[in-house]
Image (cartoon, rainbow, N blue to C red; front, top):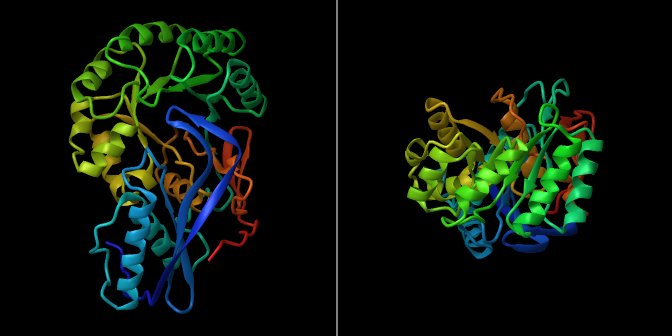
Length: 350
């Protein structure tokens, strides 16, 4: 339960983050990402949270989030809300939790104090290989390994399958599995006709896991894939769908080997905690990934992950994608996300 009884003011501000280079996904190309910052004040301090969503992947739209933020802020000003009795869409719930935690912590953007935020521990993260032509993706993989990443996550499903196999073959020729972990993210690109054949071929390259091999909502097919795949399966978009429908028991029914946690797309930290509890009860592994948040949201997710004592490599390396991100204490070195408590935060649009 989030206590909002001391909150006297609430407002929000839109942002547009510009990618350094256009980002190609299975859902198309992106030049920028829109979102909102939510502010909660008690007349002494002001906490900030990020309302982050991805059009086409998130359940909600920009207009949905805007309408809910407007209604919430009006309710605060009219003194009609004191707890989290409102039912919000995922990105707004995430923003509210983050802003409330920040305010409770003295508005220092210190939501969870751990050895990570003290600068004494780092979080291992994967190097993300974006979609592109064969030369572009190969160059990214070489660049990430040179930077010290020992786990790479490669997007698949956009290029011809033979081209992607050539990229994997070349990578494994120079970077053996005992030293380099390779994760694949299909974003639901495979179908019932070719999924099992493709998984069998991909398994030759010592793949750690494959995220969302078929589109979300195909429960019978996904259950069979989880049961029969020669590569461990990680649910991603499937969880966003299940969290929205509050059908979390389906996680146990599908019996994937891993799940991917994206708090901003799944209903915030409270819902993420519920999902992790179910997963751990059924011996399903998990790791968290950012969902193109600015450093405000990324900071919150990283601090939350640090409380979980999960040793798996996380997917929190997206902070450097933008030309106009907020300056933060977060930085990446040797394949790990670090927090420098002596680095000041930059200005955030209000």
